[in-house]
Length: 258
Image (cartoon, rainbow, N blue to C red; front, side, top):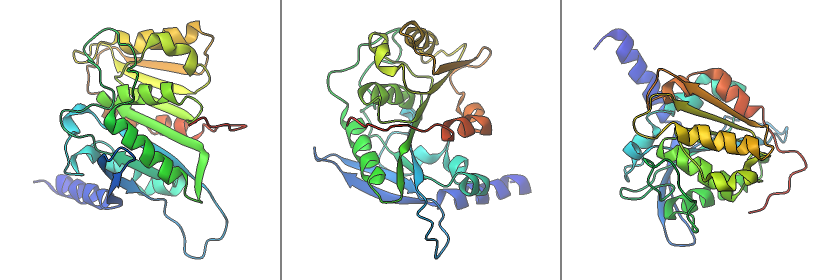
């Protein structure tokens, strides 16, 4: 192992250790493993500062119950020294169980209708979000959601069900029910997809973006990487400007319908 690789492993481990390992049981009895990154606060700080809350939804490959593998793509993103200094926040990273999905649909299809009922594990993840958002120092006007692949579908699903809840959304390689686009016209969304994605059809992001536009929505921004396939998340999350965009969004005249 090179010195550079060893050093990077130490950085990764140090960042991952900042995410507290927790478990949550929702009203349906679902036990959800999750990690929680808390904002760094200075001792004696009485400024009354409120912190944004980010919900991150992982992809299909990170499902399980080890409460570990789902951090692999974001551990250093939000827990880096720079980010924690410039954008102190709460980050919730729940883990979906094997054989379940954040949105119970076939992501290889060109279209799906949103299920009548929210999925078992997305219901639990939303409940965790509500519990953290209820903390006295959480800023409920700055609740953000992002997810990749299966988590991209979960991101679209949750903002469709609760469009007034989130200040911004950043779905990667996901898809939504285009018939529900009218519900998404007032939320800032930055969606991403690889132009040669062989796992989730690129038309999923293209079509929902067009559908939102057709309903008069002008807050949707669709970014496509023409020469990239499915695995675009490092490109997206390592681009600091995308995180800056998300954290610049805020709900005004908040009326949350939960």
